[in-house]
Every structure is written in C-alpha cells, then in structure tokens.
Image (tube, rainbow, N blue to C red; front, side, top):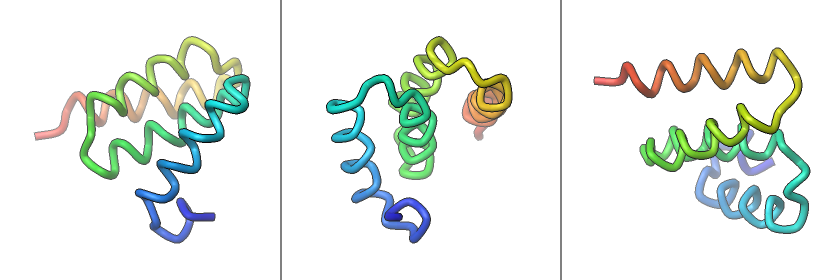
Length: 76
C-alpha cells in the first residue's frame, strides 16, 4: 500500500523487511528495485533488479526488469 500511495521510504522498509522474512518472494526484488530507482539510488536499484533477473521466472517480469535496467543505464 505504501508504494501505491507514494510513501516510498516506508515502502522500501516494508519490502526490505519482507525480503528478510520471505526471500522466496522474488517479485519483492523488482518492487524494491523500482523504489530505489524512484529515490535516486541507482546502484541499489540495479543490484536488486539484476538479482531479480536471476531469480524471477516470469517472462513478463523479466522483460520489465530489462526495460528498467535499460532506463537506468540511459539516464542523463
């Protein structure tokens, strides 16, 4: 909910805590990567997205991750 309402700092804490408890929730790496990117922490965003790319099996999510990584790499 915090992510949807733009409470990114709280959402970051939520996803970080969730991934500690349930690292098998691989979509969490995508979500947390997005939050890091929104907050301007591109190195952490890339780290989470690259890890998500390795562990997420859903092809649509992989496509989304690749697009986000490309967007981050091409930022001014």
